[in-house]
Length: 226
Image 1 (cartoon, rainbow, N blue to C red):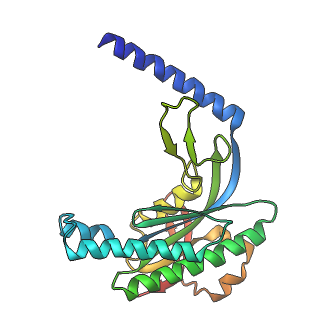
Image 2 (cartoon, rainbow, N blue to C red):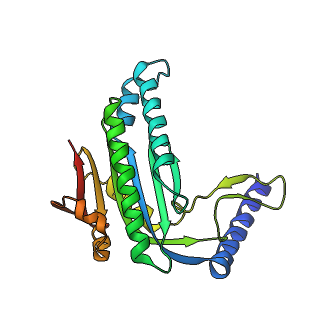
Image 3 (cartoon, rainbow, N blue to C red):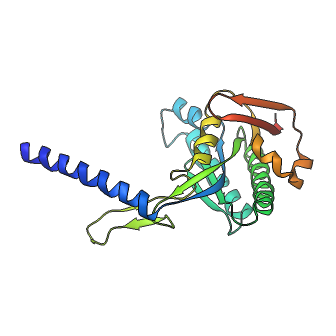
């Protein structure tokens, strides 16, 4: 046991050293935007059925996920990265040389994705979706993160998707959505700082409420389906 403990301690020191070297030598910071969106009532409906896969409600929950997946595939383009986490979607885009145009494109597409998702889920009998769009920075290691594998064939492969890896926009969007501050209905919220860019999509929004979410800043309710 002493040998195992000593090996673990040595590995900890190696991990810390490698992490510092990666941050210093290979990292860069990008401004980025993220939409976090998930299905309302998904977990509660499954919990009530004790996760019985033969239950009609659990089967229906899987149908909701499948429809959610189809919406994402047909709503977005190649400039956006999508990660599906069970009953949630994360859609991200980095900002480059033309942030005003890039923000306008992102807001228009994710607004459309939200609307189609909400209407699709409600039509098949679900409770709709709730989404939050946030702006932040993404701290990238090893350049283009994705499926990573060590040089040794025995090394495990693991997935590090950019929209959720060391991304403050993702952290803010998820934090706001799960904070308990928002309405319990199908709705879309947008980071107030994005309004500075005066995107044309904003002309279609009905901005009535501002939510000042502790630690995460101000977010606007722009679409709502009761």
